[in-house]
Structures are given as structure tokens and as C-alpha cells.
Image (cartoon, rainbow, N blue to C red):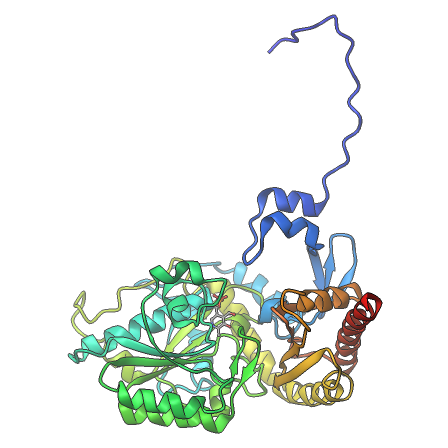
Length: 450
Ligand SMILES: Cc1ncc(COP(=O)(O)O)c(C=O)c1O
């Protein structure tokens, strides 16, 4: 198009400030679980790179990743051995479909996982996200009974405060709450018994399992820790009793170890501490050390066997995802499992968990702003005790920690501490210092207000 006013003097445009990373981000990216109208104003970090257990933002500031990048990271970031495994696999093949075909590194991964998962004669159906691993488990449990010719076993028992992911099936198992209430009309009903906050939860669950024995396809739990509801903890013996009730009632047990799996609670899987051998187990998050999206539904040989039949027959599990069994993710997961064993990562989890427990006991648990500290291994919830609802203490304390160079993110008024599993003694001190500082800020603000 030609200039409509060729005689007009050309006005020099003032130099526009280059957009910041946050502005560029807010203009085109939609962040999950985030109100985008408030996103840019909430001082988000835009991460550019990482070293060890520290994330480095676009301005070069460093933050200790004390939430393991939403509970996925295990060995730290930029681990040379994992980087090398990724590069080596990229030199072979990045991805090939698992539908009707195989891939050597996925076979190797399943072979390496088989002896360490607490599932008898395990078979692995790989996917990419934890919620999908749960979704697959639900459908497998449902079809298992159909394939066996048993009618009526088509409902699920799930616990109060449960969280299993954000797809419609996993949301149906979850105990709702304000964030998912809008989707309730889409969800299917489940038998719901109280969660781990109720000291009698196991008795009530066992009684309901017995009462609904003929209707239940499966019982679904997060063994030992209900993570997303604020690190609510159960005793191993109570969880074991629930497992026994499932056996007695002949229903399947699904253990969702998406959060607890791969070492967080001090054993490779929380089910081990509870003496459970679930029929189906869901894993995700830490399986690749936090590198790549991978999850798996692990089925026992007994469950898997019910799906064998004629080619293209009705027993087949007609379900699969394009990126299920991604070769890059499998190569990293395989190397990750080797490192967890070679570096005695679980020994470090137990030692650092003990240290964290004593430090929190000395410096945090008795503070007036704190209602309760809950911990299993390196999964910790510090529940705050605000004097009134809506004060956003969780957010404020985490903002105080971030200002001190430690990345924390709350679940409501529960501050979650979940450092990577290779965290050091010095880093544990740094985390507690930052949390303590965030609590001091609160205390300072409330005394200034009075
Ligand atoms: C116990 C549990 N199950 C499932 C999920 C969902 O996993 P994803 O976010 O990978 O879909 C989560 C996520 O936090 C979880 O804690």
C-alpha cells in the first residue's frame, strides 16, 4: 500500500520498550491452574535454564527448586548422565508407535521396572501423564470384570480428599472442591468414604468395601499420602488393612503412586511400606526424573491375562495414546532407575527426611502461624493457621521464600516442601531458613497491623 500523505513529515516513533518475558508469556501462553488476568501481576518466574537443584530465571536469578518442579524432579536438573541418555537415544530414534509394534528401549525399561514394582507379574501400559495412567487403570478395571463375564461390578470406591488428576475419569475419583465443582455434571458417581484426615477412615472404608463388595470394580487410593489435598498422611498399617479388605471382597485395588512413586516417601513405592501388592498401579511424575512426560499403568499378570483372547476380539483393550511409550522418555527413565539404585538415592531421602523433620520440629512446628506439620519422607505439608479465611497466607509465605531464593508453591494454606531426592543437608537448611523467613514476614505484617 502506498503512503496516503507523502507530504506529511515522518514522525519518529519513540523507541518502544522491548516486552519482558512475562509480558510475552502472558500474551500467548495459557497456564494451567492459573487465573491469567492476575498471572503477570503475581511475579511469576520465567525459567531459562537450571543447574543442579537450582532453577535460573531469564534475568539470571537462582532459585532452589524446593517443589521439585511440581513433584516430578528427583535427581536435580541438567544431570549429565540423564542428558547423555537423552542425546544417545535421539541419535537412534525419538519415538515410534507402541500400538501393535514395539521399541527396544521401551522393552528394556519395562524389563528393568518389572523386578522393582510391587505388582505381581507386571505388564506396563505406557502413557504420558499421571491422569491418563489413572484413566487407563479405571477402564482396565471396568473391562476386567466384563472380560471375566462378571456382571454388576461397575463402580469404584474412592476416598475423601482424593486427587487423581484432571481428566473426567480421574476427576470423578477425586473429591472435587472449589476448583473442579464446575465439572461435577460431567463426572460419574463413586462410593466415597472419608479420607486420611478422619482417624477412622480405614474402618469406614473397609466397612464400605464389604457392603458394596458385589458392585465394586476397584478401590482407588493414594497409598500413605494424599498429596494434592495437602499432604494428608495415613499409617502404613491402616492402608494395609484396606488392601486386605479388597482381597476379602474380591475387588481390585488400584494404587495411584503418581506422586508417591519413585522414592518420595523413602521407599521406591509407598505400597511397599504398606505391604501392598496392588492389582493395578499408576506411576508418572518421577519416572523420568522430571525430564520428560511419561506415565504407566502397571497391571498384574492376573489382570493382564483377562484381556487375552482372539485377535481383534472383544477382550482386547482398545485404548492407546499417540505418545505412549515415547523412546526418548524411556531411555531417560531407564538411566534414571539405574542412577536411583547406583547412587543410593533412597538412603539420601531417609537421611534428609530425618534432618528436615527435626529442623521443622525445632523451628517451624511450634510457631503461632502453623497449625500442623505433616511429613512422609521428602513429602511435607506445613499447614498454616490464619486467623480468618481469605488471607492467602499460603501464597504470602511462599512469596517470602521465593524472595529468599527458594521456590515454594502452596496448596491453599498448606506450604508444600518437596525437594529433589538428591537434596543436600545445606539445602535442607536453606529451605527451612526461607520458610522461617516467610513466616517471619507474616508475623511482622500482623504485628504491624495491630
Ligand atoms: C496422586 C496423583 N495422581 C494423579 C496426578 C495427575 O498427574 P498429572 O498431573 O501428571 O496428570 C497427580 C498430580 O499431582 C497426583 O498427585
